[in-house]
Every structure is written in structure tokens, then in C-alpha cells.
Amino acid sequence: MSTVKVWTQWSDLVAPPGITLLSPENFPLDSSDLSEIDFYVPLYMGGAKALSYAAQMPNLKTLQMLNAGYDDALAYLRPGITLCNARGVHDASTAELAVGLAISSRRGFPEFMREQIAGNWSHHRTAALSDSKIGIVGFGSIGKKIAQNLSGFEVSITAFTQSGRDGSLTIDQLDSHLPNLDIVILILPLSDSSRHLFDAERLSKMKDGALLINVARGPVVDTGALVKELNSGRIFAALDVTDPEPLPSGHPLWSAKNVQIVPHIGGNSEAFEPRGRALIESQLKLLAAGKPLEHVVAQG
Image 1 (cartoon, rainbow, N blue to C red):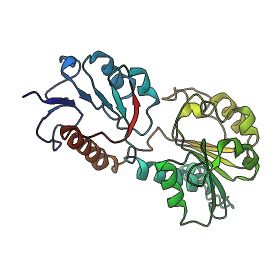
Image 2 (cartoon, one colour; image 1 turned 90 degrees about the vertical axis):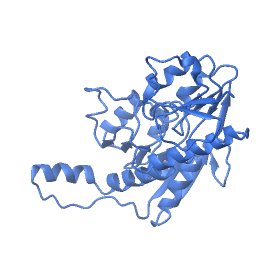
Image 3 (cartoon, one colour; image 1 turned 45 degrees about the vertical axis):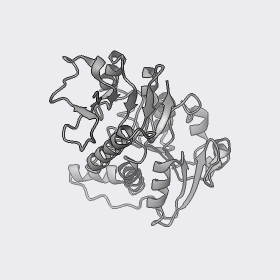
Image 4 (cartoon, rainbow, N blue to C red; image 1 turned 120 degrees about the horizontal axis):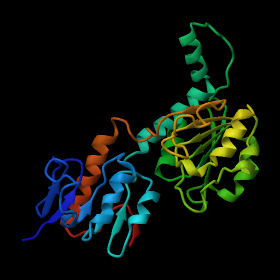
């Protein structure tokens, strides 16, 4: 009886009968026959190289991402391939980081860390997260988790989506609200409509002193326009993602004013491992039972 061959970074998953697990330990991708793989889970944080192996898998039926975002995987779809994302896996970590960046930036942590290194006691008043008006652009599972985490603070929240679902406003109403928002958190998928959503014109509509947090995808923001706006000293930014990414040494964003940059760590905390493993094990149970997979986002 033939089995479904599944490649994933974990060799010790609990797999039901009918599933053969392949991993770097017994099936290194650079030296194995990739035509054997039916179900491929690219290495988490493996970047373009990990995804590129999918093009060498002629019998691939399922491409299962370990990210919530999947825009980079669409190029590898072809007839017969189902693309699934990792909806829910990164909600806790990414939402936690978004709130952490909001607190860090509003309370001046980066500046205080520089003063600590210099040995300076520089007492001064900062902005606050409390009483802030916050816009969350994108209100999927992570956006909702961010709102939930922020509910313990004394803030007001307005969510924006393309469709206006779940009580959100539509994105075409965003511009009228920007001048009143203290913090704008981006957590929407990258698409043709969201690419450079925050361009020079939209950035100029942000309130003086406002904070832009990007935990979505780098190209949602026009990097050149953001650098110019930051260097004017008018707004602040806290970025988990950039365009380009990784951000190369010497890029003007590194030295821009009023910016805090972390290297795309939103989902990559210790909370990822158990959630990622549980997702794949759940998908394998469905696969073995002949049931529809969860979190299908595209079909080839």
C-alpha cells in the first residue's frame, strides 16, 4: 500500500498510518529525489531557498506554509497543488510583539537604552500607550489578537479591513481617521491592493508624533517615503518587517530618526514550536482520513 510522503523539519511528529515522514535527517533536500514528496512544509524562516524546492517537486499536491503570510508562495502554485497557511500559529507571538513595540516606542525605551549605555540619567516625560487612539489595519486572527491584548489598556481601537467585516471600517475610510490616530498597526496580507498602502501621501496624513507599527509585510509601506517622513522628525515607526528584507547594512532606514527595527521576529518565539507542530499533526490526520485540509488559501 502506497503512503503519502510528507517532508517537514520535524522528524518526530505523530503521524497516522498512511503517512511517511521525511525530514532533513533522512531526506536532505539537496541530495534526494524530490519527486517522491507529496506534501511539503518548507523550513520555517527558511526564506526563498526553502520555498524554491517546491519547484523541483513534480508530484507535489500540498504546499503547507508555517507562516500566516503566503504571498511569496503563490509563485510556486501550479495545477494540482493546494496551498495552506499557518493561520493561528503566530497569533500570540506576533500580537505580543506588536503591543511590545507600541509600549517600547511610546515610552521611549530605545532612547533610554542609549542613555543607559552612555551612563546618562536623562529623566523626561514621554508619550503613553494609555489614552491612545489606535488603528489596526487588517483584522484577521492576528489583528483580533492584538486588539484583545490591547483591551487591558485604556485605549480606543478602530479596525480597518478591505471588506469591513467583523465590525471594522473599510480601508477607504482610513484617510479620514489617520489625522486622529496616535498609533497605526499594520497586520494585513501583502497583495496588489496593499502594496505601498502607506505611501508618501498616506504617511503625510498621519498625526504629528504618531507611531506606525508594521508587523505585516515590508512592502505594505513605501520605504523611501517612510525614511523621508522619519527624518523630518514628524512621526515614529516600529518595524518588524522591512523592504528590502533582510535590511542591508548601510541602508538609510537603519540611521533614520525615530525608528525601532527588529529582524522579523514577530512569530519566531518559543511559542511557535508547539503550535507549529500541532498544526502539521492536525493536517496529517485530516490528510490520512481523506478529509479536507484546514487553512486552504489558494489552489493551483
